Amino acid sequence: MLEKITETFSDVFRTIAGKATISEKNVEDALERIKIALLEADVNVRVVRRFINGALEEAKGEKVLRSVSPGEQFVKIVYDRMVALLGDERQDLVLKGTDTQSVILLLGLQGSGKTTTAAKLAVHLKKKGRKVLLVACDLVRPAAVEQLTVLAGQAEVAIHREDTRDPVQVARNAMLRARREGFDTLIVDTAGRLQIDEPLMQELMRVRDAVQPVESLLVADAMTGQSAVDIARAFDERIGVTGVILTKFDSDTRGGAALSLKSITGKAIKFIGVSERLDGLEPFYPDRIANRILGMGDIVSLVEKAQQVYDQKEALELERKISQESFTLQDYLEQIQKVKKMGSVKSMLEMIPGLAGQIDEDQINLDEMKHEEAILLSMTKKERLNHLIIGPSRRSRIARGSGTSVAEVNRLLKKFEKSRTMMKKMVKNKGAMSKLFGGGA
Ligand SMILES: Nc1nc2c(ncn2[C@@H]2O[C@H](COP(=O)(O)OP(=O)(O)OP(=O)(O)O)[C@@H](O)[C@H]2O)c(=O)[nH]1
Ligand SMILES: [Mg+2]
Image (cartoon, rainbow, N blue to C red; front, top):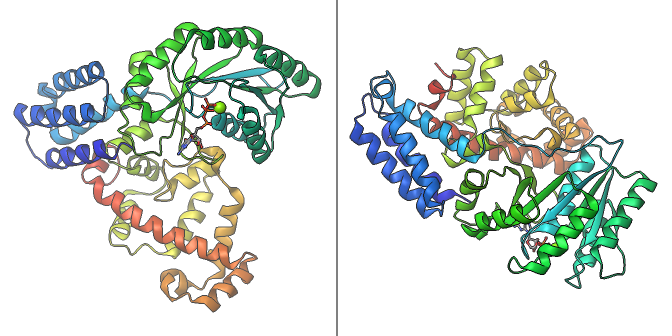
């Protein structure tokens, strides 16, 4: 998603960032192109106008045009505005403590992804140590309860379902059951309609009043484009929306909805759905998405974080290695070991080029990290310096030596190769960005 805008941004930035001096005309031209890209991506017209006018005013100021690095200042202005547009800070769910009940009500049109998202959220919250009960309150579509039951099975969480037509009854009983059986979090799946209609709203209001949700999340399909904004407004007016989950972020959409939602409705995007699978739910981080959109990859956070541990010389050396693809498994191992000292798993992983900014604390698989280190240590140094010489028989030796499997060794090698290519691309795209964000020389 959003590839098209990213292309334009990268292109504009490349043109402007390298310039030693830029004129008002340069700024205007650059913003004109950005404006067209945003409009083509289906971003709301008002949002685009505000974005462009604000950026124009700021960028044409003396301070920018006369500065030592006007191009980079310009990029920073656009970046900051993009983060603001997406909602500034990450907004997490606001739930009560586990000694009491928190109800999450999911709302949305038909096919927006409510039922799938209910199960994904259950997985997410279970990992955070909550006891989750899924509640099947879509009694309109015949197969809905069955669908949620199957998903609950896959997610290995409990489900409350009843053979009735009354969602309020199901919701009430689910709460009683939760109290009896010690569930602290209820996720309520509701019925969708093709369009917002009165009977749906009435039903949702009754369910809402029965469960008193702490979060009423609108599940919106990223492919809906512009109308997502109207849908969000309508649900907010009638039911009260506390946040949005934007599904199908992985799809080939223009992405305008994502960029307009926060700014027009004031409702934060809390998560994005990135696949059909149950692990396909990611917390929404405005700055990371802005990075992605602006084509800077996550190199910015890498450079920022890297700064904390490496001195600049080391960072430059690493950058050189990455760009020349001479980054080896030996380097990879050293990264793991060096940053391990820092304690936090997250900051440790953030340090590894290619992983920066893509990690969510609760997606971290500690065991996998340990396995990777073990695998790397079971290789000879020569192998770590040139992974291409590791043939099939060595792979099984390494697997045995590290107490892992050949599949795991293969996976590590594949991952390494993939991230090496990715890192190279990121470093290349970065250009002058590292200076701006405090890294590099
Ligand atoms: N690619 C992708 N597909 C998704 C995502 N979320 C949901 N889907 C798919 O979208 C379709 C509809 O999802 P559901 O969860 O059934 O949607 P719903 O809102 O419950 O639909 P109704 O109950 O009919 O109103 C399913 O095929 C899901 O697998 C996502 O983030 N990415
Ligand atoms: Mg459903």
